[in-house]
Picture 1 (cartoon, rainbow over the protein chains, first blue to last red):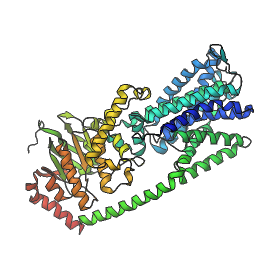
Picture 2 (tube, rainbow over the protein chains, first blue to last red; picture 1 turned 30 degrees about the vertical axis):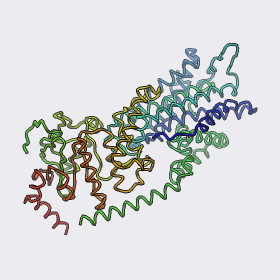
Picture 3 (cartoon, chains in turn blue, red; picture 1 turned 135 degrees about the horizontal axis):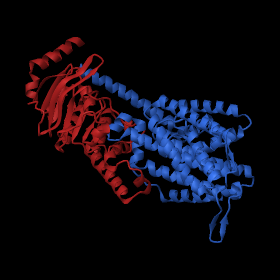
Picture 4 (cartoon, one colour; picture 1 turned 90 degrees about the vertical axis):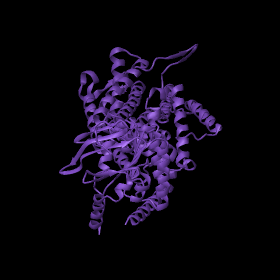
Length: 341
Length: 264
């Protein structure tokens, strides 16, 4: 993580590209395309959040769809029942989801690997059943409809109302940028490095003075807070939430995004979100097939491309080198033994 | 050497420590103390309980009985990260590096206790945070130059030679700024050249005022390097003393001869 100085022009290109993306809606006429692009942005926040715990900390969760749901339902309930605007529901969604996330993390992260996966699966299912059955609060299978759009933003004489998909895009893009910024700041810090150390070798990390459990729970909480924010955005963007969106399939979808894009990579999370959103829209007519394809993709990715699309370019070279090292090590170990005898 | 409960010049005191796994007493009523600035060696045949002893000292496992003191403070059964915080750092018998990190990144992990894991300063990039980060990076530069890995800092640690991987581990341990460094068979699997170079490094580390507790098999290394040796067998202390005495001690010879016969 030593700073390798990037050429200044690369930074400028990134900045200009980032600003240029705000102009994207000008080139898109079809509102459906705009809708899909907006969905990609919301999923990108989810994938960034999940990547924090899966990619950077090495703790697999298949319950993050539920955190997304909690964020969405909190926003929906507050907006419908108490008339809160988006700017009020958003912090509530984030905080409530983070609190629940920290509790689940506190319980679940005592477990490791497949046991953690099972625990998050169980948690996700329980939350989904709550959405489905607590009809008084969540509207049951019908969900909650008629969630308000964010209030019109007024800057001097200019007004930005949220009427159609095109209007939401800049707002969502800003949140994606915020997510990317926060992710970067976190991973380029002692805390972020501690997480990667835990992912790579827990015992060694702990011997360096890193409080493993606390660090994991903290990252799990941040990760769920990302999902809470995405949930609030989703609720106010679609104006309707219903339980089937936040079922087990959603958790798998987010995980697939992270795996396909490349774990532990910001660009990977965004690319994964784009690919999965577009493909799931394309497979809209056959949702059963979708899960089959995702499952297959995850297996293929884990077996052959564990670092996802972002790792594709370096992977074959790296594997070769790693094999060499292992062989070297074996030879050295043998020599070492023969010295002793 | 005495085995009194309080020993002012000792950095580490182990009192009547016991640990069993099932019916096997891995460490049995073991007492010894490590004097400041010493290079103290623990030797003994395979399965004598040496690594168990290290795991007890570093908090990876808890003892059934007994007490471990660091600077006369009780550290028994503290969590490993808390013990690291108290100034104990270690290397592992089978080198444990972080597979996806370069040498620099690996050693940077060792500065966790300096930079801390606070989140808000990281997100807001406070002045204090940036200063600590810079301080950490300066310290890494110093350490990497000291262990002779500065030129390799951008290489993946796991791709280095075996001897250099051990250096990375030692550099990472030094980055925690320890008072006591535990080395678990640091030269196992090394060739003679690597062993010699590592021994030099250990005495240089020791010259910086860091006490070293080392587990070793290599009698030559132990005799040249250390100034105090504790021999254990079956989890119990056999003898203790400076190398000259240990070398010719009948009990030690017997333990090692016995092992040689069993191997043959």
